[in-house]
Image (cartoon, rainbow, N blue to C red; front, side):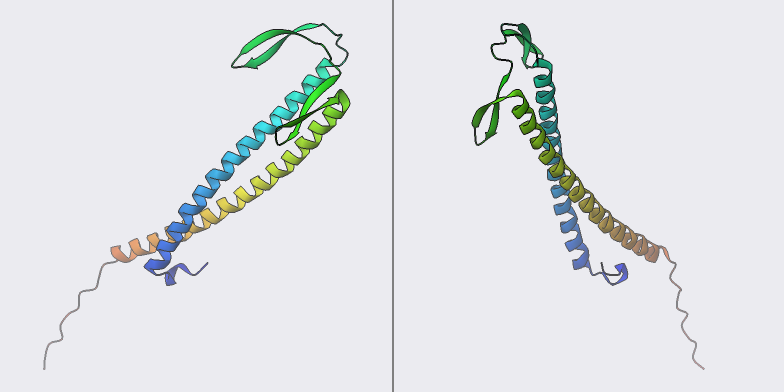
Length: 159
């Protein structure tokens, strides 16, 4: 960036606008990161559930969580078959191993995306801190200039 001594008032205003836009972007990326984390956790839960259901006999009764701490009693009809969403609201039936592989692949892709978002967020935060440092330094210098005692000018006496 430019030396903070050479910044005009207009430059400072542009930096303030840029700073605000970056903060909004950072908030949006942070929200995306949280959503991606939730999706990764959902993949983990699904994978562990499939593993937990391996070897369970048909007609086995179990509690199935339906959300908000509520469960229903259900019977397992086909523990070796899993319905997996593949996108655009389309689901397919897969055997347990194929379902686990699909979910692990999805989790890997989400993890890569999470890492990219985290990198983007870190870069944005660094840019925000740069702007804050420049503006803070400029404000400190201006405050010092205001506090410096002005030397009174003594009028020269005529000869």
